[in-house]
Amino acid sequence: MSKVIYIFGDDISTDAIYPGRYMATVLPTETPQYCFADYTDLNKKLVAKEYPAGSVLIGGNNFGCGSSREQAASTILGHGLVVIAKNYARIFLQNSINLGLNLITCPDIEAELGDEIELKGDKVINKTKGKEFSTIPLPAARMAIVNAGGLVPYTRKKVVELYAKK
Image 1 (spheres, helix red, strand yellow):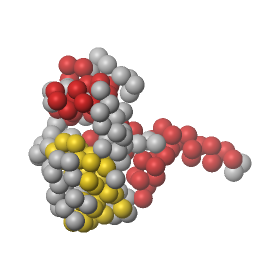
Image 2: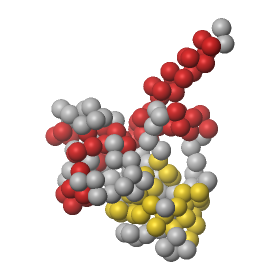
Image 3: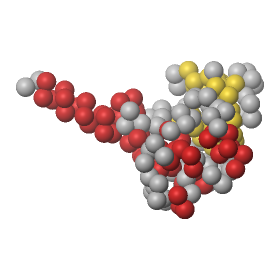
Image 4: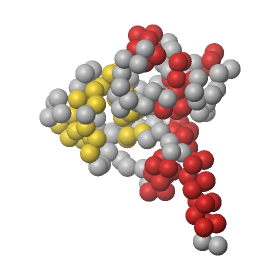
């Protein structure tokens, strides 16, 4: 079971997730320190590792809008966070898939700070509220990429499988 650690509204840009002033730092091992840097309380707690992997961020509509920087996805992935949002900006969604960050699309999600959340199949269960919400799952091909850990590991796996057949 995971707890909701932050709730965002609509149109959270990639610049809010990973501010452009840190673009000189692009290594996935270094980007997490700047995750939500302008949300100072959230950032301090993330950097101090006060939240366990699996902690939940709730987003509204168009989460990840703005630039195409993939660091926005890698910085969230670096903390092992789960994002549940009503929907996502197209490029952020694809960058997340390519990096192996599983985003949960849940148009009707209702949650408050501290709520206990359980992910079960195609449902998000808010244990605190006693409510269940349907998700919109990724297509199987995209989920295979996420499950492999991203596009590079997925491609590597497919190449190995191809050559193993020869």
